[in-house]
Length: 310
Image (cartoon, rainbow, N blue to C red; front, side, top):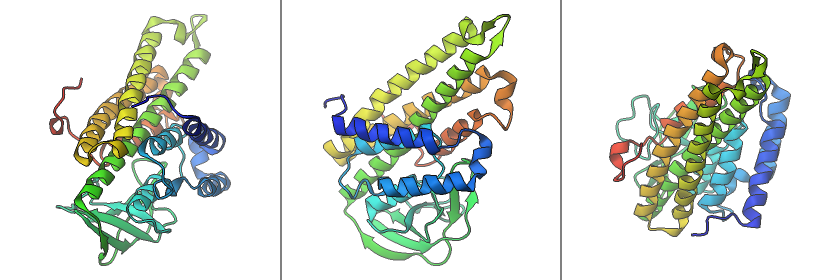
C-alpha cells in the first residue's frame, strides 16, 4: 500500500473541504438557515458524491470525502444515500438500519428499521444478511446528531434483490470505514475549533493556548488525530484490496480507534472552551453529538477484534 494520496485523491479531498468550509454551518443558528441548507444540498447533489461507489470510487476516496464533510458539519444527506447507492445504485433511496442502533442484520430490531440521512428520500434500503429489502419512509425528525435527520420505515418491507455473502461483507467493511471517517472528521473540526479559541481567548494577559494546561491536551489530541488518519487510511484501502473478511476486521479496528480518539478530542475541545463549551451556542457539542451518534452506527466493541487498543 502507498499511503500517499494521488493528485486526483488530493483534488477530491480539497473540493470536499472547500464545500464544507463555504456552505457548512458556522454556528448553531446556521442549522435553521433554509437558504444555506438549500444551496448546500444543490452543491452536494451537483458534486455527485452520493453515488461515489457506483461511479467507481474506492474506499480511500469515499473516506476522504466523508472526513471533510464531517469536519465541516455538513448537514444534508450524504452517508445514508452513499451506502444505499453502494448496495443498489437507485436514486431516491437512503440506508435503513435496525432500531436505534445500526447493524447489517435485522436481528431483534428494538424500534423497527430507522433510515439514516432521511431527508429527501422517499424509500429506504436495508441489508438483511444477503437480502436487499426496501420500504417507504415516515416523517423525518432530528436525532441526537443535530446535523442529520432520521425517519422510521413504515409499511411492509419488500425484497428488492440479493447479493453474495462476500459482497455483503465488503459492503459492511465500507460502511464501518465511512462512519469511522466521519468520526475522524468530527475530531478534526472540534480540534480546530478548540485551537482557534485557545489563540483568541486571553487570561492574565496571555492567550490561554500559551499555558501548558491547555497546550498539552491539544497536542495530545493532534497525536490522536494523526494516529486515526493512518489506521483509517489503511482500512479504507483494504476495503477494495483485501479479502472481504480481512477488510471487515481492519474496518472494525479503525472504528474502535477512531471513535475512542474522536470522543477524547471532542471532550477536550469542550473543556478548552471552559464555561462557553457547555452552552448551546458553542459548536463543540455538535461535533461531540456526531461522534456519539456515529459510535452507535454500525457499532463495534473492542471484544470483536483480536488486537489490543488503548
